[in-house]
Every structure is written in structure tokens, then in C-alpha cells.
Length: 90
Image: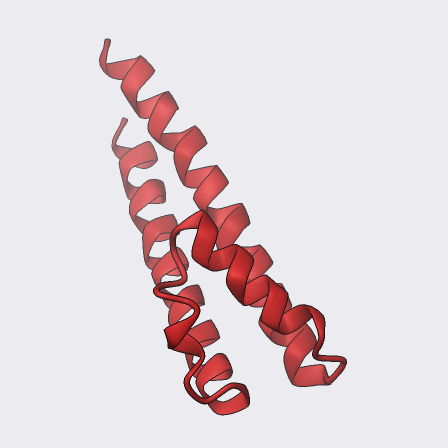
């Protein structure tokens, strides 16, 4: 159980870093983007960020898309680990 909890904490920290880095990328590429994208955690805002990035053929745009994908993968893994933790508590 302890290993699962520690692993989940690590994933949460990684997921926090990823949107923070993405925010920095978007601020430099799209000043004022936060008017359209309220945060980079909820699904709707992630879709809005994805729309901005879709039209950006640059290397920076591709890297920002990877950060967004990474954040989504981390969220999915956190959900799975949380389920495992819940199941082992019951």
C-alpha cells in the first residue's frame, strides 16, 4: 500500500510540473492565451490549448503538444493507481 501511495504522489508531482511547463510555453507563444484557456488541468481547457497548438507547426509547438499529451497520460495513470489504492483499502 505504501508503495502505491508513494508512486501516486510522484505522479501527481509530475502532472503538476507538466501543466506548469506548458503554461510557460503557451505564455511565450500565445500572449493572453489564458483568456481562452482557464487552466490546463480540466478537459475543456486542455482541448482549447490543443486547438491553439494544432495550428503551430514549430518545434516549440510540437513540444508543447507533447507536454499536453504527457499531462493527459499522467492523469489517466493517477486515476488507475487511485482505483488500486481504493480497492486495496476495501
